Amino acid sequence: MPFAEIGRDIQKAVNHLRNGEIIGLPTETVYGLAANALDVAAVLRIFETKQRPHFDPLICHVSSLDRIPQWVSEFPDVLMELARMFTPGPLTLLLPKRSLIPDLVTSGLDRAAFRVPAHPVAQAVLEQLDFPVAAPSANPFGYVSPTTAQHVAAQLGNTIPFILDGGPCAVGLESTIVGLEDGKVTVYRLGGVSIEAIESVVGQLQLQINQSSNPKAPGQLKSHYAPRKRLILNQLSDLSKSISTQRKQAFIGFDSYTDLLPREHQFLLSENGSMQQAAQRLFDLLRTLDQSDFDEILAIPVPEQDLGRAINDRLRRAAS
Ligand code: TXA
Ligand code: MG
Image 1 (cartoon, rainbow, N blue to C red):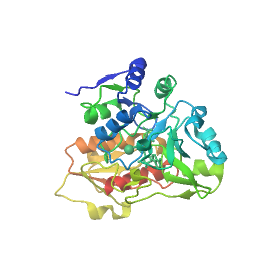
Image 2 (cartoon, rainbow, N blue to C red):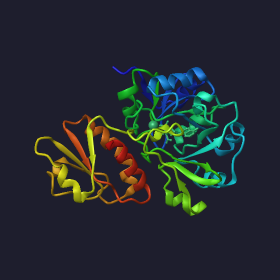
Image 3 (spheres, rainbow, N blue to C red):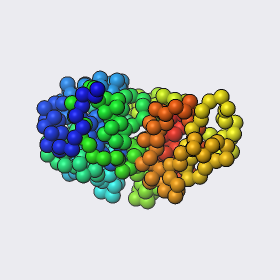
Protein backbone atom coordinates (compact mmCIF):
# COMPACT_ATOMS: atom_id res chain seq x y z
CA MET A 1 0.00 0.00 0.00
CA PRO A 2 1.43 3.37 -0.98
CA PHE A 3 1.96 5.52 2.03
CA ALA A 4 1.65 8.88 0.31
CA GLU A 5 -1.58 10.75 0.68
CA ILE A 6 -2.86 12.08 -2.65
CA GLY A 7 -4.77 15.30 -2.14
CA ARG A 8 -5.66 18.74 -3.39
CA ASP A 9 -4.85 20.67 -0.22
CA ILE A 10 -2.44 23.41 -1.30
CA GLN A 11 -1.78 24.48 2.30
CA LYS A 12 -0.72 20.98 3.21
CA ALA A 13 1.80 21.00 0.36
CA VAL A 14 3.14 24.37 1.49
CA ASN A 15 3.52 23.14 5.07
CA HIS A 16 5.34 20.00 4.04
CA LEU A 17 7.78 22.03 1.95
CA ARG A 18 8.34 24.51 4.78
CA ASN A 19 9.06 21.55 7.09
CA GLY A 20 11.79 20.18 4.84
CA GLU A 21 9.66 17.32 3.47
CA ILE A 22 9.63 16.21 -0.14
CA ILE A 23 6.34 15.96 -1.99
CA GLY A 24 4.88 15.28 -5.42
CA LEU A 25 4.08 18.60 -7.11
CA PRO A 26 2.07 19.04 -10.32
CA THR A 27 3.39 21.30 -13.07
CA GLU A 28 2.10 21.76 -16.61
CA THR A 29 5.01 19.70 -17.99
CA VAL A 30 5.35 16.68 -15.69
CA TYR A 31 5.02 16.07 -11.94
CA GLY A 32 8.03 17.08 -9.85
CA LEU A 33 9.58 15.61 -6.71
CA ALA A 34 9.78 18.85 -4.79
CA ALA A 35 11.72 20.18 -1.80
CA ASN A 36 13.23 23.39 -0.47
CA ALA A 37 16.25 23.99 -2.71
CA LEU A 38 18.11 25.77 0.10
CA ASP A 39 17.76 22.82 2.48
CA VAL A 40 20.65 20.49 1.66
CA ALA A 41 19.26 17.62 3.73
CA ALA A 42 15.96 17.77 1.86
CA VAL A 43 17.72 17.98 -1.49
CA LEU A 44 19.82 14.95 -0.57
CA ARG A 45 16.61 13.03 0.05
CA ILE A 46 15.38 13.95 -3.44
CA PHE A 47 18.47 12.29 -4.92
CA GLU A 48 18.00 9.28 -2.66
CA THR A 49 14.31 8.91 -3.41
CA LYS A 50 14.89 9.05 -7.16
CA GLN A 51 18.09 6.99 -6.94
CA ARG A 52 19.57 9.76 -8.97
CA PRO A 53 23.34 10.26 -9.28
CA HIS A 54 24.59 13.44 -7.63
CA PHE A 55 26.14 14.62 -10.88
CA ASP A 56 22.68 15.20 -12.38
CA PRO A 57 21.58 18.73 -11.33
CA LEU A 58 18.08 19.85 -10.30
CA ILE A 59 15.81 22.61 -11.62
CA CYS A 60 14.73 25.36 -9.18
CA HIS A 61 11.10 26.47 -9.39
CA VAL A 62 9.79 29.91 -8.43
CA SER A 63 6.40 31.60 -8.85
CA SER A 64 7.49 34.50 -11.04
CA LEU A 65 10.40 35.86 -13.04
CA ASP A 66 11.11 38.71 -10.64
CA ARG A 67 11.95 36.17 -7.94
CA ILE A 68 14.92 34.85 -9.92
CA PRO A 69 17.47 37.72 -9.73
CA GLN A 70 18.04 37.29 -5.97
CA TRP A 71 19.45 33.79 -6.65
CA VAL A 72 21.57 34.51 -9.73
CA SER A 73 24.49 36.84 -10.42
CA GLU A 74 23.42 37.72 -13.94
CA PHE A 75 20.34 37.57 -16.16
CA PRO A 76 21.49 38.12 -19.76
CA ASP A 77 19.10 40.29 -21.82
CA VAL A 78 18.42 37.71 -24.47
CA LEU A 79 17.45 35.09 -21.89
CA MET A 80 15.26 37.68 -20.18
CA GLU A 81 13.56 38.29 -23.51
CA LEU A 82 12.86 34.57 -23.87
CA ALA A 83 11.71 34.36 -20.28
CA ARG A 84 9.27 37.24 -20.78
CA MET A 85 7.87 35.51 -23.84
CA PHE A 86 7.49 31.97 -22.51
CA THR A 87 7.20 32.37 -18.76
CA PRO A 88 5.29 31.14 -16.87
CA GLY A 89 5.58 28.04 -18.98
CA PRO A 90 7.68 25.04 -20.02
CA LEU A 91 11.00 26.88 -20.31
CA THR A 92 14.04 26.42 -18.04
CA LEU A 93 16.86 28.97 -18.00
CA LEU A 94 20.48 28.24 -17.06
CA LEU A 95 21.81 31.28 -15.19
CA PRO A 96 25.04 31.91 -13.24
CA LYS A 97 24.17 31.09 -9.66
CA ARG A 98 24.88 32.93 -6.47
CA SER A 99 26.41 30.94 -3.61
CA LEU A 100 23.02 30.94 -1.84
CA ILE A 101 22.02 28.04 -4.09
CA PRO A 102 23.70 24.91 -2.68
CA ASP A 103 26.27 23.24 -4.93
CA LEU A 104 24.40 19.99 -4.47
CA VAL A 105 21.45 21.43 -6.42
CA THR A 106 23.64 22.29 -9.42
CA SER A 107 25.99 19.30 -9.09
CA GLY A 108 28.82 21.74 -8.59
CA LEU A 109 28.17 23.61 -11.86
CA ASP A 110 28.39 27.40 -12.03
CA ARG A 111 24.91 27.79 -13.46
CA ALA A 112 21.60 26.97 -11.83
CA ALA A 113 18.48 26.00 -13.75
CA PHE A 114 15.37 28.12 -13.07
CA ARG A 115 11.82 27.65 -14.18
CA VAL A 116 8.49 29.37 -13.53
CA PRO A 117 5.77 26.74 -13.98
CA ALA A 118 2.43 27.85 -15.39
CA HIS A 119 0.28 25.28 -13.60
CA PRO A 120 -2.08 27.24 -11.32
CA VAL A 121 -1.65 24.70 -8.50
CA ALA A 122 2.16 24.94 -8.67
CA GLN A 123 1.79 28.72 -8.77
CA ALA A 124 -0.42 28.72 -5.68
CA VAL A 125 2.19 26.70 -3.77
CA LEU A 126 5.29 28.59 -4.94
CA GLU A 127 3.75 32.02 -4.32
CA GLN A 128 3.66 31.29 -0.61
CA LEU A 129 7.30 30.25 -0.32
CA ASP A 130 10.32 32.49 0.06
CA PHE A 131 12.72 29.80 -1.16
CA PRO A 132 13.10 28.19 -4.59
CA VAL A 133 11.77 24.64 -4.89
CA ALA A 134 14.10 22.04 -6.38
CA ALA A 135 12.14 19.49 -8.35
CA PRO A 136 13.29 16.83 -10.76
CA SER A 137 10.64 14.79 -12.50
CA ALA A 138 9.00 12.48 -9.93
CA ASN A 139 10.12 9.14 -11.38
CA PRO A 140 12.90 6.72 -10.50
CA PHE A 141 16.06 7.76 -12.35
CA GLY A 142 15.94 6.78 -16.01
CA TYR A 143 12.24 5.91 -16.15
CA VAL A 144 9.42 7.72 -17.95
CA SER A 145 8.33 11.01 -16.30
CA PRO A 146 4.95 11.07 -14.49
CA THR A 147 2.05 13.08 -15.89
CA THR A 148 -0.55 12.23 -13.22
CA ALA A 149 -0.53 12.04 -9.42
CA GLN A 150 -1.26 8.31 -9.78
CA HIS A 151 1.92 7.82 -11.81
CA VAL A 152 3.88 9.38 -8.95
CA ALA A 153 2.14 7.25 -6.33
CA ALA A 154 2.72 4.04 -8.28
CA GLN A 155 6.50 4.38 -8.09
CA LEU A 156 7.37 6.75 -5.26
CA GLY A 157 4.27 6.51 -3.11
CA ASN A 158 6.07 4.54 -0.44
CA THR A 159 8.78 7.10 0.07
CA ILE A 160 7.02 10.48 0.26
CA PRO A 161 4.27 11.73 2.57
CA PHE A 162 2.13 13.72 0.12
CA ILE A 163 1.35 14.09 -3.57
CA LEU A 164 -0.48 17.26 -4.53
CA ASP A 165 -2.97 16.33 -7.23
CA GLY A 166 -3.24 18.88 -10.02
CA GLY A 167 -4.81 16.56 -12.57
CA PRO A 168 -3.14 15.34 -15.76
CA CYS A 169 -0.32 17.57 -17.03
CA ALA A 170 -1.36 19.78 -19.95
CA VAL A 171 1.99 19.78 -21.78
CA GLY A 172 3.15 16.25 -20.96
CA LEU A 173 6.82 16.75 -21.89
CA GLU A 174 9.54 18.27 -19.72
CA SER A 175 10.58 21.89 -20.11
CA THR A 176 12.92 23.12 -22.83
CA ILE A 177 16.30 24.04 -21.31
CA VAL A 178 18.09 27.12 -22.67
CA GLY A 179 21.22 29.04 -21.79
CA LEU A 180 24.11 30.90 -23.39
CA GLU A 181 27.20 29.22 -24.79
CA ASP A 182 29.84 31.77 -25.86
CA GLY A 183 27.04 34.33 -26.00
CA LYS A 184 24.88 32.18 -28.28
CA VAL A 185 21.41 31.02 -27.32
CA THR A 186 21.71 27.28 -26.84
CA VAL A 187 19.08 24.65 -26.29
CA TYR A 188 20.25 21.74 -24.12
CA ARG A 189 17.02 19.78 -23.91
CA LEU A 190 14.09 19.77 -26.32
CA GLY A 191 10.81 20.22 -24.49
CA GLY A 192 7.50 22.00 -24.15
CA VAL A 193 8.59 25.20 -25.92
CA SER A 194 9.50 24.38 -29.52
CA ILE A 195 12.72 25.38 -31.27
CA GLU A 196 10.60 27.22 -33.82
CA ALA A 197 8.98 29.30 -31.07
CA ILE A 198 12.35 30.22 -29.55
CA GLU A 199 13.82 31.05 -32.95
CA SER A 200 10.91 33.36 -33.65
CA VAL A 201 12.16 35.48 -30.73
CA VAL A 202 15.96 35.21 -30.91
CA GLY A 203 16.68 34.14 -34.48
CA GLN A 204 18.92 31.17 -35.08
CA LEU A 205 20.04 29.18 -32.09
CA GLN A 206 22.34 26.28 -31.50
CA LEU A 207 21.48 22.86 -30.19
CA GLN A 208 23.65 21.04 -27.69
CA ILE A 209 21.60 17.96 -27.16
CA ASN A 210 23.69 15.12 -26.01
CA GLN A 211 23.00 11.56 -26.88
CA SER A 212 25.49 10.07 -24.49
CA SER A 213 26.77 10.46 -20.98
CA ASN A 214 27.58 14.09 -20.36
CA PRO A 215 28.43 15.58 -16.99
CA LYS A 216 27.06 18.95 -18.12
CA ALA A 217 23.49 17.79 -18.52
CA PRO A 218 23.15 14.17 -17.49
CA GLY A 219 19.37 14.30 -18.00
CA GLN A 220 20.39 13.91 -21.59
CA LEU A 221 21.79 10.42 -21.04
CA LYS A 222 20.73 8.46 -24.06
CA SER A 223 18.85 5.79 -22.18
CA HIS A 224 16.37 7.90 -20.28
CA TYR A 225 12.62 8.23 -20.29
CA ALA A 226 12.70 4.50 -20.95
CA PRO A 227 9.98 1.94 -20.26
CA ARG A 228 11.16 -1.45 -19.01
CA LYS A 229 9.85 -3.19 -22.09
CA ARG A 230 11.76 -3.13 -25.32
CA LEU A 231 10.72 -0.26 -27.56
CA ILE A 232 11.75 -0.36 -31.20
CA LEU A 233 11.66 2.94 -33.07
CA ASN A 234 11.65 2.71 -36.84
CA GLN A 235 10.57 4.65 -39.87
CA LEU A 236 7.22 3.41 -41.17
CA SER A 237 8.95 2.09 -44.30
CA ASP A 238 11.17 -0.13 -42.11
CA LEU A 239 8.49 -1.23 -39.70
CA SER A 240 7.77 -4.54 -41.42
CA LYS A 241 11.31 -5.70 -40.52
CA SER A 242 10.41 -5.56 -36.86
CA ILE A 243 7.11 -7.41 -37.05
CA SER A 244 7.18 -10.73 -35.21
CA THR A 245 4.61 -13.47 -34.88
CA GLN A 246 6.35 -14.75 -31.74
CA ARG A 247 5.86 -11.68 -29.62
CA LYS A 248 2.74 -9.70 -28.85
CA GLN A 249 3.57 -6.26 -30.22
CA ALA A 250 1.95 -2.90 -29.57
CA PHE A 251 2.28 -0.11 -32.09
CA ILE A 252 2.48 3.60 -31.31
CA GLY A 253 1.63 5.81 -34.26
CA PHE A 254 1.01 9.51 -34.64
CA ASP A 255 -2.32 9.92 -36.47
CA SER A 256 -2.75 6.85 -38.64
CA TYR A 257 -2.90 3.10 -38.30
CA THR A 258 -0.74 0.59 -40.14
CA ASP A 259 -1.87 -2.54 -41.97
CA LEU A 260 1.00 -4.52 -40.46
CA LEU A 261 -0.62 -5.22 -37.09
CA PRO A 262 -4.12 -5.90 -35.78
CA ARG A 263 -6.00 -2.71 -35.08
CA GLU A 264 -6.52 -3.53 -31.41
CA HIS A 265 -2.76 -3.60 -30.94
CA GLN A 266 -2.39 -0.05 -32.21
CA PHE A 267 -2.38 3.20 -30.24
CA LEU A 268 -2.43 6.64 -31.83
CA LEU A 269 -0.94 9.64 -30.09
CA SER A 270 -3.45 11.93 -31.76
CA GLU A 271 -6.12 10.81 -34.18
CA ASN A 272 -6.56 14.34 -35.51
CA GLY A 273 -2.84 14.98 -35.85
CA SER A 274 -2.44 17.42 -32.97
CA MET A 275 1.15 17.64 -31.80
CA GLN A 276 -0.02 19.04 -28.49
CA GLN A 277 -2.28 16.10 -27.83
CA ALA A 278 0.47 13.70 -28.89
CA ALA A 279 2.87 15.28 -26.38
CA GLN A 280 0.26 15.15 -23.66
CA ARG A 281 -0.46 11.46 -24.21
CA LEU A 282 3.01 10.05 -24.85
CA PHE A 283 4.27 9.27 -21.34
CA ASP A 284 0.93 7.95 -20.12
CA LEU A 285 0.76 5.63 -23.11
CA LEU A 286 4.33 4.39 -22.53
CA ARG A 287 3.44 3.59 -18.93
CA THR A 288 0.19 1.89 -19.87
CA LEU A 289 1.91 -0.30 -22.45
CA ASP A 290 4.74 -1.05 -20.03
CA GLN A 291 2.17 -2.51 -17.63
CA SER A 292 0.15 -4.32 -20.28
CA ASP A 293 0.63 -7.86 -21.53
CA PHE A 294 2.30 -6.71 -24.73
CA ASP A 295 5.81 -8.13 -25.07
CA GLU A 296 7.30 -5.18 -26.88
CA ILE A 297 6.46 -1.79 -28.30
CA LEU A 298 6.96 -0.67 -31.89
CA ALA A 299 6.88 3.04 -32.62
CA ILE A 300 7.44 5.35 -35.56
CA PRO A 301 8.60 8.96 -35.25
CA VAL A 302 6.03 11.75 -35.45
CA PRO A 303 6.65 14.58 -37.96
CA GLU A 304 9.95 16.28 -36.99
CA GLN A 305 8.54 19.77 -36.37
CA ASP A 306 7.38 21.88 -33.42
CA LEU A 307 6.74 19.67 -30.37
CA GLY A 308 7.30 16.69 -32.67
CA ARG A 309 11.05 17.15 -32.26
CA ALA A 310 10.80 16.75 -28.49
CA ILE A 311 8.43 13.80 -28.87
CA ASN A 312 10.89 12.08 -31.22
CA ASP A 313 13.74 12.84 -28.82
CA ARG A 314 11.86 11.05 -26.02
CA LEU A 315 10.95 8.14 -28.30
CA ARG A 316 14.61 7.75 -29.29
CA ARG A 317 15.68 7.71 -25.66
CA ALA A 318 12.90 5.28 -24.77
CA ALA A 319 14.19 3.04 -27.54
CA SER A 320 17.81 2.92 -26.45
O1 TXA B 1 9.60 20.20 -16.96
C1 TXA B 1 10.56 20.04 -16.20
O2 TXA B 1 11.65 20.60 -16.38
C2 TXA B 1 10.37 19.11 -15.00
C3 TXA B 1 9.36 19.77 -14.04
C4 TXA B 1 9.18 19.00 -12.77
O3 TXA B 1 9.74 21.10 -13.81
N1 TXA B 1 11.60 18.85 -14.35
C5 TXA B 1 12.55 18.05 -14.89
O4 TXA B 1 13.65 17.87 -14.08
O5 TXA B 1 12.45 17.55 -15.99
P1 TXA B 1 14.70 16.70 -14.29
O6 TXA B 1 15.52 16.73 -13.07
O7 TXA B 1 14.02 15.45 -14.60
O8 TXA B 1 15.60 17.19 -15.46
C6 TXA B 1 16.44 18.28 -15.20
C7 TXA B 1 17.57 18.34 -16.17
C8 TXA B 1 18.86 17.68 -15.69
O9 TXA B 1 18.89 16.31 -15.96
C9 TXA B 1 19.88 18.43 -16.48
O10 TXA B 1 19.95 17.86 -17.78
C10 TXA B 1 19.29 19.82 -16.59
O11 TXA B 1 17.94 19.71 -16.28
N2 TXA B 1 19.88 20.75 -15.62
C11 TXA B 1 19.43 21.08 -14.39
N3 TXA B 1 20.26 21.94 -13.80
C12 TXA B 1 21.25 22.16 -14.67
C13 TXA B 1 22.45 22.94 -14.62
N4 TXA B 1 22.76 23.67 -13.57
N5 TXA B 1 23.25 22.92 -15.71
C14 TXA B 1 22.95 22.15 -16.78
N6 TXA B 1 21.85 21.39 -16.88
C15 TXA B 1 21.02 21.40 -15.83
MG1 MG C 1 13.69 13.65 -15.33
